[in-house]
Length: 385
Ligand code: KG4
Ligand code: ZN
Image 1 (spheres, rainbow, N blue to C red):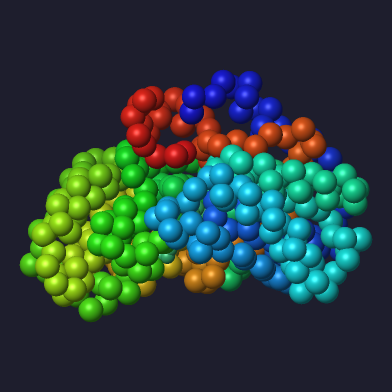
Image 2 (spheres, rainbow, N blue to C red):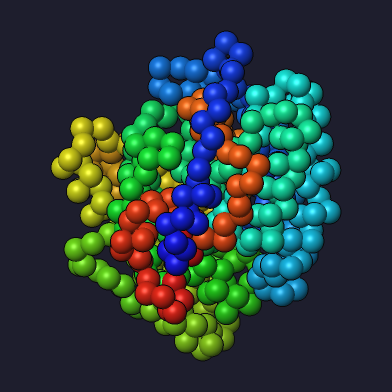
């Protein structure tokens, strides 16, 4: 976004060193430290006509939720320190559970952004150390690319597909043609969907992270009598906005008197977010179907773990004649298996990185589009990528 072309090209520069897969099979260690999970995973990618079958040999996720709970959100400094403490043990466990030695690996992949840069640097530096010490190719992975391929961890999915990526930091629709080849179709102009869940949950006095807590509360509520704003409805593009909903929900939360009032509001909020995701996706599905013969709609990211949202989007996809796919629940929220898989797919294409590759707090998937058409103006609070 704000970065110069030179900065971005250096970060993305791949050395092109060819991987030497054993019988076409690639085994990769993945590391993820971009937010509040320290994660390591070993994934094996088997070549198939559909572009590869992923076998997860291990996936260890250490959540820092307890470290941050008292603050109601992730504290970057605490996150970075905790990653430093945990990364070695988590990686050793991932290697032990996979039953492999470093000599059995074909490469090491680490998230290089976007995210809290102090944390990103921990995992990326650890990955560089493994790469140098063991003579393994290094792959710097975009965290969002990890989410984009995460559905391929549970099923053999061929490219291309239409993707809705909904997490704590991101809310965007993308056309995914393959690894490193994605175009942004729409994005949030303010908060991400997960961010809206978290902030409204906080206003309701629920714990962090708010999404799962709000989903549990909503199960006992009936929000049908609560009127919440329907942002951007009828707009021709595929962008999202959750700030109006958030403001309205804050106001109603202050007036909640009983637990039932809160549950009713939680239900109304969850339905409003599901409706907006469905409405904007609907536009993208129609436009996509007009131009492409294939019909696959994938939803990924932490918010894809929400059952109401999954069901709503599945119905939306069906209305437009699309197959629907979401990653297995454990791979919706942050994990390193998706980073290892993205790394293996890059490695298969010979897309490796030099050891001077940098950590990036911001790193849009569709860099060209983000530069020419930023989803928010500089100085305004907005989408993180
Ligand atoms: O993908 P993720 O683990 O991290 C990011 O890359 O942001 O997503 C975390 C987000 C949080 O905002 C969390 O509240 C939300 O996903 N989330 C949910 C649910 N599980 C996680 N939101 C709604 N319902 C859920 N069940
Ligand atoms: Zn994520």
